[in-house]
Image (cartoon, rainbow, N blue to C red; front, side, top):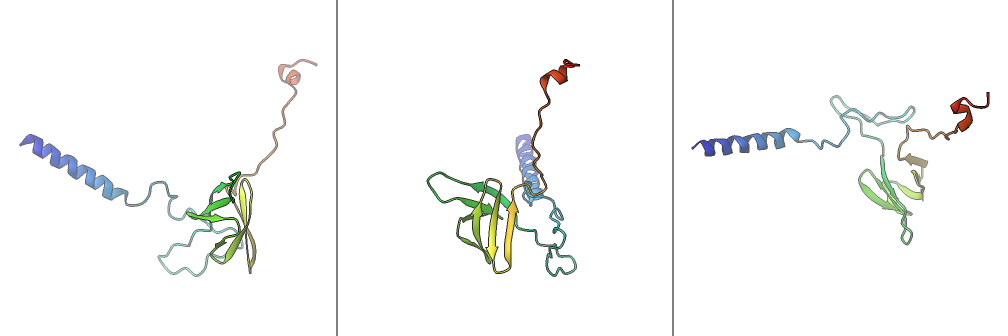
Length: 130
């Protein structure tokens, strides 16, 4: 009898935790995406969320095959269409989509700015040469 009660409580606890997750825990929180300055997110009614901007998730540049990128969960090969634009360039950290309204560049990490590393002379670090 006690074992049946324990099993029932464990089953209940597991089902409650599965139901509580509901949303993919790896997704960013609601309201995370903010449209860059000058970019419209479209008409949004009360209680609706703005659609997120296009997100470049991964770039694949194989040696023997056509390069492709995963944009918003869809694999798009070089030259293929995505929505109303065509994928025209695939670089290491960004891709370029081209359409009637111009070009759009999507970067893997749009907020990161690469800076070259300048190494100090080893003697000046140790205090030598003074």
